[in-house]
Image (cartoon, rainbow, N blue to C red; front, side, top):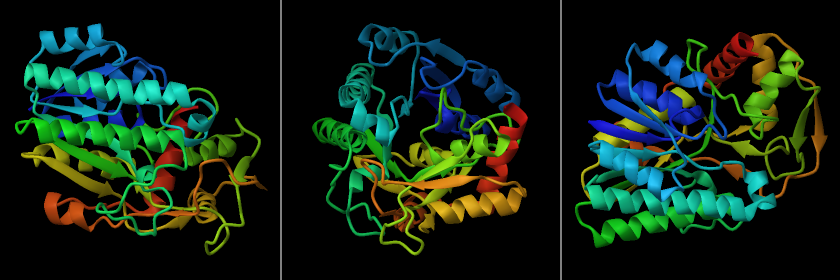
Length: 330
């Protein structure tokens, strides 16, 4: 297939581009480098041994999107481009609603016009809010804990209604949990601009000495050690999930959790990083962060049954690959 990947230079996007090309697909990447780096494009080519077309553009710009669709013939689209920090979304809700929702509207409109009938959407477990864990795809969406989750839920509704009104248009909504890790080559990984919002790149930068210490937000949650519990998934496993989703996308609206199905606390993850990589990570406990919930992990059985996909990599693989990437790139 010829697949357009928005946000393809980003963390999850770049790994998915590698997996797509390894599976024999042709890709076109569009990215504006707001939270990614240009050199990632060369690294994708180095890992895959293949070339691809690239557009530097913002997918909230309808003129730019129109040009990309007019100049190419796509079989499907995977939409990663978006702002993604829960805490930041609480501080900057308008930026998140505009960027994340408008981009989905514009891309869906272009897909209908140019008859691109496969749309895979990068959603999030945050749409479940404070539902009872493990989260299942049939649960009512309760994303009111933060604007980021709301933007994902709104985008899901937009795409669902579009698919219902247009029988040829098929959608796969991938709700994923907490991606960490990096490609085993160490060439691509999570490398955000500025101070990281996500746990693993922050841990890595403390380990290198670039940051003084890790802040652990909250140790009074109703969890085994009081710190937040999340379903950490290796980014390469997650990338393979996107390949499975677009290859198996035929009709209607499809919703899948992409996670391991196991919860790991913040301190368990930090301690695994320290043990596996034999390096210290100083940390301090701080108050809870706005928008966070106590526990979040998946029931991932539907993706295994319907897509033939399940995770293969362990927490040990995740912390080892994260540190390998950080050591090679800081």
